[in-house]
Length: 484
Ligand SMILES: [Ca+2]
Ligand SMILES: [Ca+2]
Image: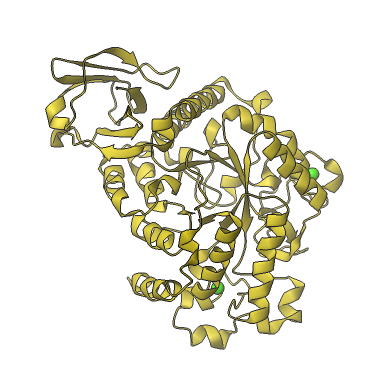
């Protein structure tokens, strides 16, 4: 509970910012689908920069780079993603810490250079040009809380960092104490403030469309306000990572100037309900709070990422993990918000906690038929979402379901410009037919002959007749139907 009180104080200080930002048009990612890559673990396009690479060691560099990411843009485009978020590519500390190389990009030594393992700044520009030339946006991870353990700046610029005494005396230890022991930047130091603001400008000048800000729970509020003001002035979309954020936290930070945060509470609910086979009530409870969000269409929705175990890992059995990942991906594509797909989730890759969740990406030439099937289902669901304005940007309204069914059945509509799409998630172990009174759902739809799901390759149907909605749904799956 301590966090809530402190967050309140922080937001009070944020609210003191200029009122000018509200007059600016807001950047938007509504309708986008983001694909997340960790460049070292994606694709090696240039073996010449593979110093220290050892693919047998999950804590070592693996050789993936910007040249490889650029080469694989057609793959990302074929999946249907419209934006790429890449984890940091800064020049990293040159030595390992805790037996781990800085392959992940979160141990920066120089915020304005590309690590040689990833390539050069020209390679970064080529990637941005390639992505944008293909109609995709670029989301760059920005570290604003710390340097790497062994970065030269730590010894050269001690005044830039919080000391143990400052941590001990801090009102908010999340902000002023070291995160995992990492040298903690003191953003209220004017030099640090300018450094970080200029870093954002530097990467903006490289053409990126959006920033994903790492670990915002640990960053000073007044500095964040200035940073977000500047991003908003420049039209840069901002996505904050507040680990464990629920709807209330996301709402507070949207009010404070972020365009988006990751909705961790939904990820947790989907892990339990969709992967774990528990009641869909946990998901419903998250969706019921949507009205608290100032901008629900901007919120980042995900099944897993590089910091949590793989979604598919939630089942002991590979076949079940794959089937439920397909269910989860289809479900994700029915929701209001911005879906984010972590590399490999589209083929239901497995993996436990870091670094096992960062296994090397595998592409078409090494997939099993089962992995190909998950990819094709994901591709079809993304395509259906993009083809339907209601599904990609429509308002979301939960429909009441009878208590006896609510553990296994979740229904909601997505509506835009007179179009209505019905989303139906079915968590039951068996295929099932449901007949529900339209009046009990609070809708008044006209008669509809049997209609298939918008998601290709799925045996799901809806019809409306005699005042009833009839649904035929496969076991543990999510479907979307055009009903008006
Ligand atoms: Ca390489
Ligand atoms: Ca900090």
